[in-house]
Length: 102
Image 1 (cartoon, rainbow, N blue to C red):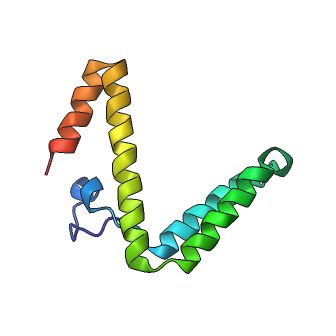
Image 2 (cartoon, one colour; image 1 turned 90 degrees about the vertical axis):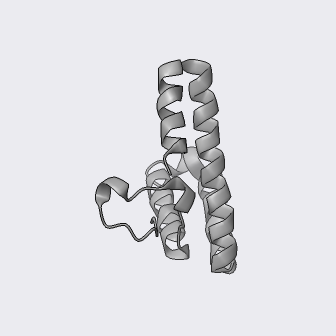
């Protein structure tokens, strides 16, 4: 999932360099749909929505997908950081170190 050319597993994950492929995104959608299909009556709307996401991914070009998902991931990390700041200063400091590690 991370295309930064690093072979050491310790350095493999770099959220700033995260680039999901179309195949990886579709596989993720399929895993979530499979999970939700274990209780389809409870998850009907979610399954329909995820199928819509999956369809939009299939129709979107690779470069746009990379840009969109890069922004989603960056936003997720920002939300985690902000939540950590509000909850626990020690956790926030650890996330800050991860964010600044470049």
